[in-house]
Image (cartoon, rainbow, N blue to C red; front, side, top):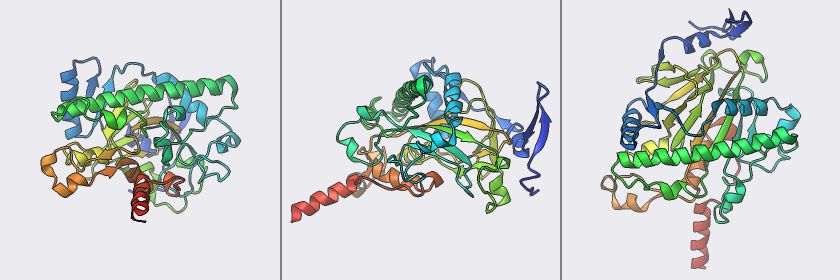
Amino acid sequence: MDITPEQNLLSQVDSAGITQEKSFSHIAATTDQIELASIDMTWPKEKITEGIMDQLRNLGFLLLTNVPGYNEDELKHACQWMFNLSEEEKRKLYQHHHNPKNTNYYRGLSPFIANDVSHKELFDMGLEYSQVSDYEKIFSLQEQTPFPDDQGDDGQKFKTFMHQHYDIMQNLGVQLMSHIADGFGLPSNYFETWFKDDPCSTLRLIHYLPRKANVVACDKLTEEELKLTTPEHTDSGFLTLLSTFNYPGLQVDIGGGVYKSIKPVPNVLVVNIGTMLSRITNNDLKATWHRVLDIGVDRYSSPFFLEPKYSAEIPQQLDPSLMTEEQKNNKLVYGDWLIESIKRFAEFANFQKTKPTLSDLQAQIQLDQTN
């Protein structure tokens, strides 16, 4: 039954007796849920590998428990602190295409966008710029992340924690990729050169507001679009490590376009893969379509997107026997591919390259050699 945004609200009283506005989508998000299989990071290596490969070949989503160094409470606090900054302070962090006064194009804040099917504000950070090699700094996706440095001790604590959490997630992502290499019978360090140095990985903080908050216009969206804060999509790259902070709302396609809500679990990471990893495994590993419902209340999450370095050359397939000689010689430059891939998301629809791609540099070299 189609419902209007106004009808998409339901008053409920929580256990503390406080009346909250919740959507019918919130009810959908908390009923008929499925439980993801859990992989305990204290298990023996072989058991972890077996569990990861089984889940990524089937549903494409899994949970990680007992992750060393993972502090969900502090991450949620950092997330809420960031989005409680004043609008004036936030504008200082906006990406250039949201605030032309700023020089950051890929990292920083993206605000709520009017009539966007994705209804959220987000903060993206990358590897500490001083750790990026001079060669990789040539490319657009490597830049200094803007932080709210004028917020005193609180701002410094936020920045320090975020860098620490980034490193924990990066190392965890590389560890998981070693399990995937093992699962395919490859050397455990097969992927290491792609991810060890100069990764383009992104740590993201997200704040979802219900549509009823009316922070931006939504009058051009369909009734179905109004039920979501993130539309159906697959992630782009390799691995996503997601903190949901025990909020409901995440749904996955279990097959045939049928979406089921994931039962939230505290103090775990939700893991799924992107289209690039699925592609090079000949779709043996599954990049699952997923979405987020408007649950009628504020919602926070924090995904970490594991990405290789910009100049990493990615083969068409991990298995050479599946490739022609032409395909073997036609590797993808990861950063060049990612720039084109992210433009399908509203927050990067107007992303501008400020530096040459690797393909641009190679073309220039060839031109210079012929002149």
